[in-house]
Image 1 (cartoon, rainbow, N blue to C red):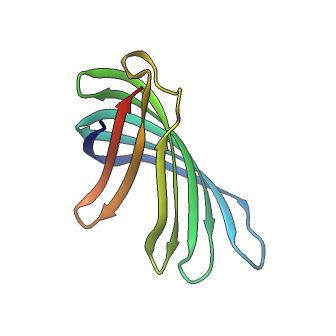
Image 2 (cartoon, one colour):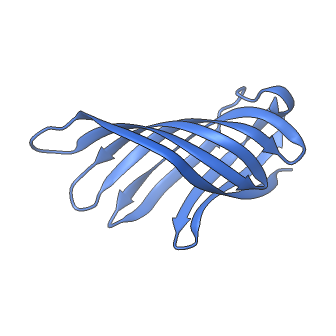
Length: 132
């Protein structure tokens, strides 16, 4: 049976550099993003994002992120992979999961799925998890 937790997060830093900017077609970027999570998850995250900026407000990203801190009474770190596509300034086709075998310390055996949401109330991270 999985447990559902939710936290807000703030972006502490965002360093983005282009790695391919053709005259025509989509532009490609790499970003290193640091986050601070508060709520059910008290942690810090570091993510590497590969992003595509298409035409007409289209685009997408894929990311690998290590989160280090506390979920409930358990401490340690784990890695998530997440991504999504954008069309008309709205995220579509998003995904996120905990990488199996990435948990450390009290978070060994952690498995599950996650989502990120950004709206006028701020940024939210939701995690549905269990221990295997």
